[in-house]
Length: 496
Ligand SMILES: *Cc1c(COP(=O)(O)O)cnc(C)c1O
Image 1 (cartoon, rainbow, N blue to C red):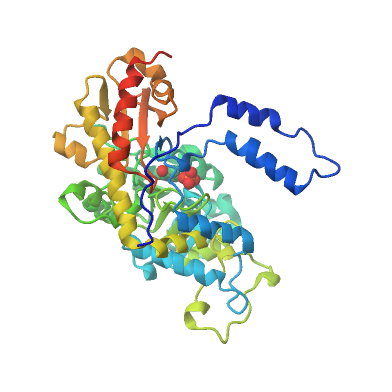
Image 2 (cartoon, rainbow, N blue to C red):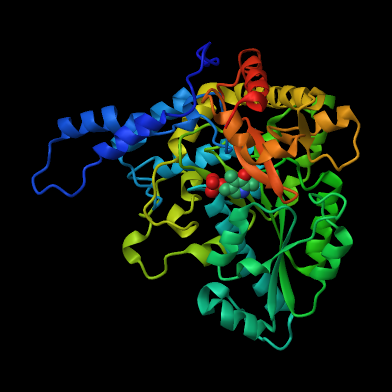
């Protein structure tokens, strides 16, 4: 087998403070009139700059943000992307295979996630989940306002935000507000709301008081039925602090029905939750299986490839059911020079591929499909599933040792569950804090102090907490767990 297994040892996680200082003082101050030469600069980059980078995906002991690693086949493909400098903006089937590779890669992503490619005709690679959320809100906004206008007798004509802008479209459609209804949203959702002109304050949390991740369905219905208001519902799949999923299959069915009843768009932010669709349907994963059940009921889905698919930065995934809406929002009108070449002699599959520049933000685009295509085909479905199972096993072992420890508490701890249920809910994230509150302000510093492992800090219930996120293909439970346990023990004793 040529599939890579995790390396025996893992490098430390951060450069030394000295290395960063050396890099900083080596930075050239001004633009030279006469260049210093490529050779000289290559040495500068390798010797000064690179040692000052934190390179989180290099070490399997980096558990900070959900970074993911880089699978070797994806890395090689990414070098080729740079070498060939292929732009993937226009579908030119007689000139380049690029758009067909992109389409095939997206097709395989759908297969991996058990989504039927035919249901997701608006599919594209983005720069990341944030950009995919922007796409989701942009097409959702277009769809819901068009829908309200179509049902309103006073409008009498088709209305498109893409053509006349949000302000006029809402006015003409008789809408005074657009709601984005969600639970435990990722911060990028508010950013996306700002970018598409709906505003951060449009995002309303409709979580249950007793279980903030889950939708309060009657509150959701109340807000959906608000007069003169159109809505986008966003499902967090999964939440970045806890790894908890906002829905199960039954919730998704109910939320879909409510969205249909009130003409709302249903978007799922599954940046890193998406790969849970590749897990086997077993008792161990029942809670995770439920968390991604019903995703196929969404109108649009955000995914990240640079997280769990382990391709290099940057690469996000966007899927939507409504190609015409996507083209309406993103098309480059009046740019005759960007029209696809006539495709009489190409196959029907090649003909069906929309030009990426008409269905996404960028016009010129990096060939970010190639590493995805390479990694999915080099390693296959089983390798990805095994990787995710290793990540989950490590997360659950960490959670278990936190549950057993006298020093730490596993979060959230206010939801009533048996120990087995609690562990069964752990995906790739472990949120915790010290029992001794006086340790918590500096807990992350204490844990990261030796630079052997790296966790990130966050807030939970308004108080500091720490978090493991396990996202690299290099994870190896037997190798990594003892290191983690030792560092957690040391952290409590370490002076800061
Ligand atoms: C990471 C993440 C994002 C943002 O992803 P980027 O790739 O950093 O843009 C959005 N939503 C969720 C749920 C995430 O985990």
